[in-house]
Image (cartoon, rainbow, N blue to C red; front, side):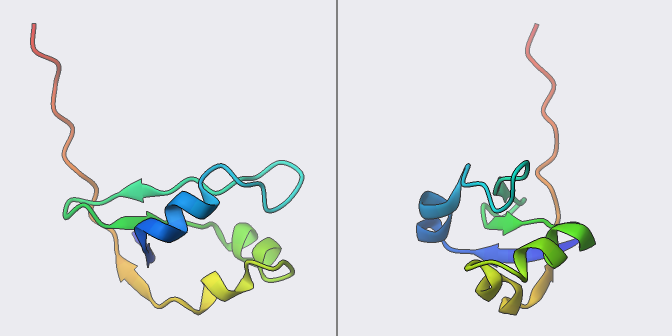
Length: 73
């Protein structure tokens, strides 16, 4: 899976902000604690028409999720 690595500042500014009527920014941490923006092709098309289009200029990078740690019983 690929996504765009963003800064902590970008996350603080945009986390939870709607970029259309029903979709908002939700960033995730990868295995190396980098914040990623993961978008569908429809999200990319929708963002391209907004003030957030600059995010699409960030190069794609491989996203490796953090491993799930089972709860301690």
